[in-house]
Structure formats: C-alpha cells, structure tokens
Length: 425
Image 1 (cartoon, rainbow, N blue to C red):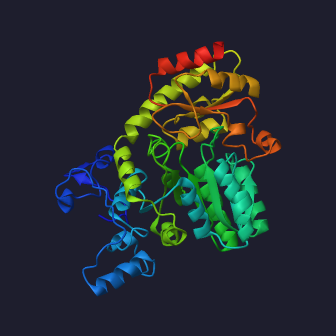
Image 2: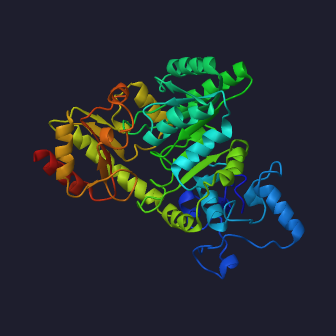
C-alpha cells in the first residue's frame, strides 16, 4: 500500500485504531516468505521487470512524474526508496492522518531538507523561540550564508504576537516558512498552531505566496498533539526521541500533504539524507509500542512535575499541564494537546546547585536527548543551548539554574526517591 493518501482502514463497519495498525499496516507477509515481521532489506539496488518499467520508476523516484511519489512506483535504489523506509513512512502517516510521509537519517536532516525545499535566496524563515539548539544554529548561522534570512517570533502564543512577527518578516523579504517548535525545548511553552495557520493564510493573500507552516512535533507527537489537524502544512519529528524511544537510533521524519511533501521527497536523495534499512526496521519495532511507552511516561511526568512544585529550593517548574488556569498557555494546551508529554524543566537557582543535584542522581541518567524509556536529565545552558550566548539564553528564559528532565517508564515512586535524595544531599 502506498502512502500517497490517508486511508481509514476498517474491519467491516469497525474502523481500526492506530495502535492496531502499527503492527501490520504497509507490510504483506506473503511478499517475504510469510515472515510475521518485516525483514531488513539489505540491498543498495533493485532489479526492474523491464527496461520501460525502469524508465517509469526513475521518473517517479526523481520527481519528474508529476503528481506521483516514489512509493507509487517501483523500487529503484536505496538512496531513493526501499521497503523498510516505505513501511515506516506509511505507518507514521497514520498517526496524523497525513497524505504523505518521509523519513530521514536524522531530525536535523528532516528540518534542513524542509527549509531548503521551501525557501530560496532572499526568502525569510520566521520561527518561535526557544528553539532546539541545532535548529537555531541552522536558521541563524547556516541558511543566512545562502541568502535565507531569519526572523524570530517574540510571542508565538498570541494572535497579536504572531501577526506582528509575520508583518515584520514580510518587510525583510518573501516569507516562505513559519516554523514552530511546540512545546519548546526546554521551557515547554506552547505556540498556537491554529492561529499561526490563520496568519499564514493572511500572509499568502498579501504576498501572493502562502508561507508553509511547519511544526516540530517531537516533544508531544505523535500521541499528544496532531499539528496537521490544527492547520499545519508539515509536522516534523526527531524520530530519535519518542517514536524510536529506546535511545538506540538516530532518525527524522516529516508528514504532510502531497503538495507540501513533494519537494522534500525530491530533494532528500539529492542531499543524501536518506535513512538506512536497519534503522527503519528498528523504528518499525518501536512504533508498535509508542502509545504504551508515551502514556506510561506521561503519567510519571505529571506525578513528578506536581511533586517538584512542592519541593523547597525549586523556583519554578515548566510543564504544559501546570499552566496557570485561564492563561493563554492553559487555553492552548486544552485545545491543542491531549496529554502533557514527558519533558519538563525546573529552576533551582544557580549553576552550582544544579550541578550538585545532577551529580547526585542515581537512577536518572545524566545525558542529553530525551524521549527514551529511561529518564534523562541535563543542564541546558552548558549542553543543548551552549551555542547561545548568556544574553541570548536569558532573553528566552533559560538561566544557569535550569535543569531539564525527560521522564521515562521507571516507577514514579523510584524516580521521586532519586530526586529527593539528590535534593537532600
């Protein structure tokens, strides 16, 4: 089955749930000697049934066949397509009812390809802050070397803030891409996707070109937030995190409409950001349990976040479910999310105190990344946001006392006991 259109799979009159489809959609055992699980297709190239079929397959894979994506044709060469990637793309698309999906060698490959596919020299990228350090560096330092300008959104939660930022960006050039990371990393602040979509529509009428709205859905997706259903054109993932979920692979993904995805799929093999079969096989394994893992970890996170609010020495706790009732953040959370995710951050006042707490943890591992089965923690100012100046970090609300915590699937009582002894020490 191709991923060129979302299908509502039914058993009679009963629509099947995503959790069920993750165990078999997009794979036919009869094509692989009856193997229950997909094998790893370790080949660089594929035979054509005829010379004319080879011509057609190449036209589709390279994007020359208008209106068709590579999974609508045959297999060509593993840099363009292969069975393991197609299985992951089809299953990933189910989570957000997407028309099309594409997987990449990393989350940054997915983001960079998205930007380069939809922007040209002189264009402007408008993006929210705080932003993942790698994405921030790409937008602020790399793409400007190719004539693509960067502009930040001071307040991506309000219509007024988004409208003002869009107008400012249009004054710099053609606004080609609006990029939101929501929730943000590490402060978990939410941006209003639906309002951003309205602003993109307004901009399109003024410019004669509607900017693409892309959302980094890594921290909530694919379970607790569906950007495409909120009006986004593209939903971007570091599949390394929750979808992979075991801290043992690197991968990225993008979902969206056929129109928005077509230039990404055409550009991916040219930039070399394609993903290997074994990593795709591991993703297929992980996607079977992503709902179970994220649900358990989110329950743990909610318990721990609430405990942190009662702990002496904690100045603030940043977690979506703790948004002040009646606030803009609470309103966005209620309409846009179905759960809080598992990432939080909390401020203990100083770097010295943060380091002392981090060094005393026994169960929670001191490491970057997030979304794995194990709980991970780090000091953002000296790790994931170390590329920013102190002034830039303070401007987005990240101080030296801030600790980031990604909660795993351990027992919540054990994690609290570990945090408690680290604080007490």
